[in-house]
Length: 414
Image (cartoon, rainbow, N blue to C red; front, side, top):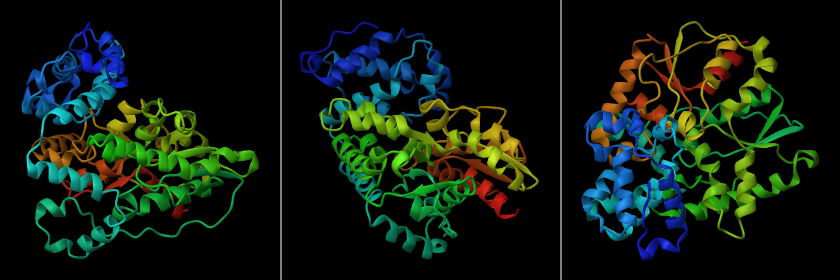
């Protein structure tokens, strides 16, 4: 697709990147068939091809409107379209550029701006933990809409104390320690059982995705730089000198962001090389499973019952990791099954999307749960706290857990 950039974009990093991405697009429409919002709304402008056309118009100088902004807002950034695209169009990068430009030109209504500000400042804030604890203490009194965002209080269990020669950094995350602390401690216990020590850098915080995808890209980059600084002493030392061999992510939403630090900070002279190394060292927890299975197999007592697994978009489309969780958990004795229909589609969580676009997020959730229930599971599993929380809000009869929690519990039974 050819485009003639408007003068204001010709000599900018965003303009050059967008132009390179647009050149790959042949406007074939394969992406439309796998776009969740197009499936719901049937509007070309609420699919990747239509949004690409809107962004192209803006880059060529056409003034964006509130309608342009709304169509871009409705995108889940699930990147299913990237998995489908035969031309390798990096739609996720393009929509980040488009949203940033449109937001600079189109003011939002006051209430909408306030909500987005509260999300991008509140979720990564140190005050989030106390606020979540307060919400959990009065959870039974909360209105249903708010109750859906406040999971029941969860015990984290003991953190392993053994030291091991093999060490890996783990990002605790901004909301996970308060909402579902057992995910992190279960990860540490599972790795400990395989002879790997989990290291947390206390100075590391939010991965930067919340601010970055709410169009505070500079704020997101600042958080990324802070994480790099927090991790760097362990990374630079290397495993031979007692440092870490990898950075492990148990939230696939954070994982896809950290894996893109190298791209996002590529033009930062002080951080480009470090960011690239951080991205290269980042591994989703599922990528460690082939190494863990031999060490754990004799010790796992997998429970009976079907585990219905929902692979998050950030894992299967963002990181292009497919099948690893299912295959390796089956090797450990779990009866893991994936929905026969639409397992590739987003559940509607998508970071802050379920708060900002509930009229689309909840139908997608219910559609996803409908397919998972056909498997008659005893438990639903996923690999990202956003998906887990969102699915649990619509599944009162079946618990929704992180797959590492199931593995941790199976080890504890041995």
